[in-house]
Structures are given as structure tokens and as C-alpha cells.
Length: 122
Image (cartoon, rainbow, N blue to C red; front, side, top):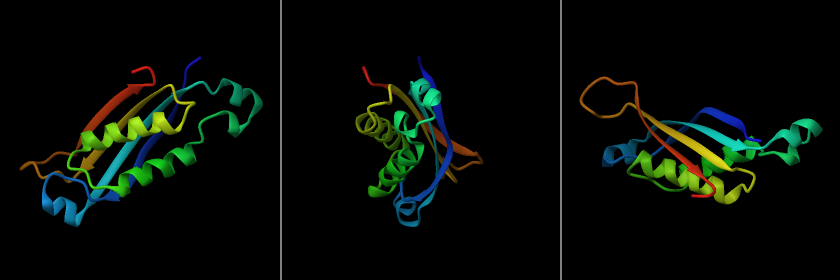
């Protein structure tokens, strides 16, 4: 059975970007993470230890977002996805979306978003 645990709109202030000003000043980044796993046994027994602990996932993502500066949100998205699969064996597949607000594109937009979907068998 496949179930999904979603972390929506986790917000981080970080220093990513292709421009030096972005890496110096920083900005708000948002992330959504869809965790594909089988939590049916945990749900039946109401046991946190039998599922993916999303508090631990959030803290792990926070660490990744802040441990290094990335030029591209694409790189950050892939890094988060790959590391989640490596650290949490219960995760079968993950979809990670990273959004960057206030993007210097010379026009008005809400944000730019990069998404990666990665399975354990890839």
C-alpha cells in the first residue's frame, strides 16, 4: 500500500541564488515535500515508530537548506530528495518542490518553483 505524508509550505530564510546579492542578502524559500510510504501499520497501531516522523523530516530539510549555499533551486530540490531517500528507509518515493520568492527576473511573478520526483528504485 502507498500512502502520502505531505509537508506543505515549510518556510526557510536562506542564502541561495545565482546572483551574489541573493547569496549575501538572502531571501525566503518555501518547500513542499510529498512522502510516499506505507503507514497503514502505524495507523492501525497508532504508533509513531512505525511511520516516517515528519518532525524529523522537517529538521533534516532545515539542516540541508542551511548547511550550504546553492546557486540553483533545482540543485537544492534534488539534494533534498536524494538525502531524504538515503536517510529514511521507510520512504519509497518523494516529491520535493522548492519555491523562491522575490526573484529578480525583470517583471512581476509570485515565485519560481523547481520540482523533483525521485523513487528509491531510480
